[in-house]
Image (cartoon, rainbow, N blue to C red):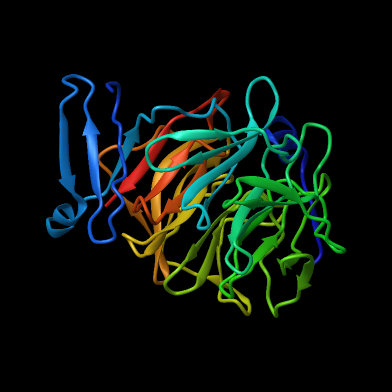
Length: 355
């Protein structure tokens, strides 16, 4: 499928947005049989310890909980974020704030954010994406926008050494902002779509550890950028929804490692771009949160399970936002959201989803 041009409204959007005490402090206790969460309350600073196993035994309830880590990255949106299985931490890179484009790297261990210093880093950018490559044990970062240029370089993060390395592939996808980067059900990292400054792409590529290879499945989604993508680790199904496009992007696509299929669910979220998505093993489904929608940022939570979308009712929710990072941390046992922006306000809050 050929790339498609964008309209002036969408062009303007991508040009402007790229292409002890205090709150709640959650500490992870590493135990494969039971995960405990320590909660330090604002008012009394009293500590209560409870078991997620006990919660699971009662009536099912879903809630977003606001964390107050000991340290947090500065406010930003359109950052890249994923779980790095090699280090057992969530990794976050770059983004944009009110002053410009960023290239700092942070890790989250369930208790606090830590900035990685003293190492080579990719150039500053926003709206890049990255995913963990199980075959090589490295995180693959691709694409983005730096305020002047659309980027097509590939960077690899080694979670064991906490270092970035620039890859030098012989072949590469087009330089784009807002690509969809995700783990392939076959264990590699894939890139789909993105916006190259003129066209929305529908090309599909796979990383083999040293080079990109273009894939040509029987069906691919319509060209788009900044769609929400999550991978169900149980069913090995990629789920993609929404995004920015020249042709209607208000649709749901799944990929099984061989071909893409356009789904026709009974219900689905409103059209959103730059929403956040990740697989949550507690729900056994892909969770989608927030996103922009016609200039109005959202804060609804949806779950793709089996063959349809279901809106989740939560006791509380993060404020509406777009361009936030989201990743599921299997050690912590929760999906984690960081940052994003609401209108022109850049955010630095951390939330976890607790079923």
